[in-house]
Length: 332
Image (cartoon, rainbow, N blue to C red; front, top):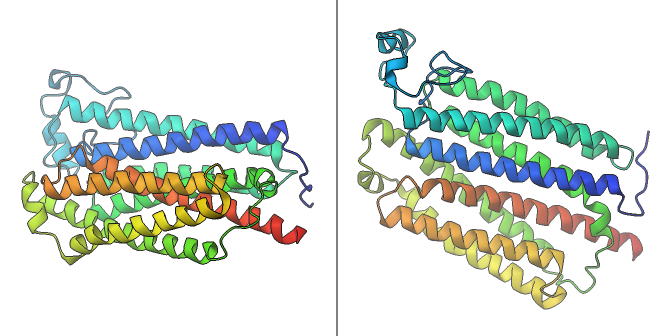
C-alpha cells in the first residue's frame, strides 16, 4: 500500500492537526507540572504507585493513615516517609494530569487512523507515541520504586521529550500539504547550514543543562535545602552553560534576521524562528534568576519548560523547512 498524493488540505488532516496540537500542549503542561513536583521536593509525596498511601484517592490528613504508617514504608525502603498534604496532593495532581495525557494520546492515535491513507507515517508516529506513553507510565513506577534516583528521573524526562518529538513529527507530517504550498523562493542560501548549526548548539546547551540538573539532585540529597550552597558546589559545566546561553541566543537571532530579510516577518518559518528566540529569552532570564538568587525552586520548572519548548520549536522548524524545500526542489 502506498500513500495517497495529497493535493488539498482535507478536513481529516485539519482535525488531526487540531487534536495533535492540543495533545502536544498538554504534554508540555505535564512537563511543567512534573518539573514543579521535582523542584518542590514533592516527588515522594506518594510513596507508592499507582496508589497513594495505599489509596486511589490520597488522604488529606495524617489522622487518616495507620498509626504505624512510617514503619510500614520504612520496611519498604522509604525510611524518611512523612505525610505532607501539600506534597502528597501535588504529586497526585501530577499523576492525574499524566492519566489525562494518556487519554489524549490514545485519542490522537485513533484519529491518526483517519489520515493513514494520506501518509502512513502519521499513524506510525502516533502509535509510537502511544507505546512510549505506556512505557513512560511503567518508568514512572520505577522512579518511585527507586526513591527518586537522579538517573531514573533524567530518563523519565528524556522520555517525555521523546514523546513530544514523536508527536511533533506526526504534526509536521500532517502539515506537509500546507508547507508544500508555502513558497520559500528567495530564502537565504545560508539558512540550511545555519539551522543545523543552531540545532547543534541547542543540543550542547541542553546536554549541559541535564548534567547540571543531575548535580543539583545529588546536592539536594547531600546538602539538603541549603540551595544557596548549590551554586558554589557547581562544576565548570554550570559556568559554561551560563555563558553559552548568549551564543545560543544570538545565533538564533541571526537565523530570524536571515528569514526576515529573505522571506518576511509573516512567513511561517520566520514566525517559528521568532518563537524560538522568545523562548530563549525567557530561558536566559530564568537561568539568570536561578544563578543570582540561589536556585529558587519555583523558577526551575519554567527554565526546564523553556528548554523543552526550544527543542520542540526547532524540531518543528526543521521539519517544516524540509517539507517546503522538498516541494521547491520538485518544482524546480
